[in-house]
Length: 289
Image 1 (cartoon, rainbow, N blue to C red):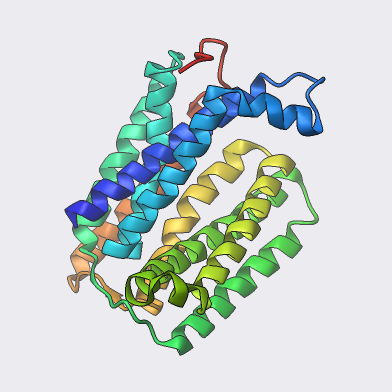
Image 2: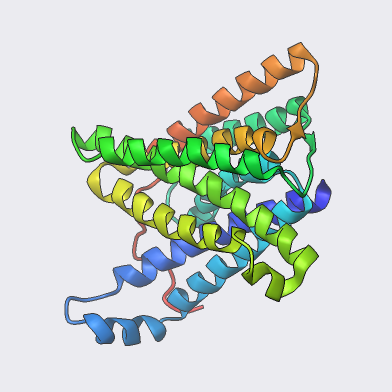
């Protein structure tokens, strides 16, 4: 469990670094940089390159964590990406952070710790039943399609919320596919991995999730889409962890109630943090690493 927690937190930190560096590098692009000129310009930016290195590291850390631990634990811990981003904004970018944001970050972390302690996730197996894969993928894949279709109409808030929900469900499915892919790699090797479906399902969900997340960020306010993207993912992952990987939680009713309350408090903390944190980076971000 300790190794799982370490690598999951490392993935969250790497994702936060990726977000910060890519945002800053892109902000320095002028109108004259287009097509190949834009590519060349970005390739010369150390921050942009660092961002993609962080993204690759985040994926690797998440894959290791998922291979060694429970899906429900890893995806819940990735919520700390928002907290790491807040710390980077304060101590790297040196932005002013509102007291409300710090309180929300503290509540989020405390609620997350209580949730994991009370829920006591454990067990699971590396070779799920194919029938469970089919039914779970069909159910949540259908939910993604319905949400994405409904997101084509309505107010910006409604559209952003629906696209965010669709993206977050896709990210949870992707995490399940990552876990299955790493388990398959450990058993069958690279050649065997190429002969089985999990790798291709992983690639497909990565593409679909990216498209849906971009749509959520473009059609409506970040304060709506970000909390949903962050919170729905672990909620769906918990269902998938039981449905597909046969993970277990505490049998104590009181602990289950406490875990449920803690998860709700964590969701509220994420929502408040998303609204209270700065929405843009200022010019104090260093241009060289």
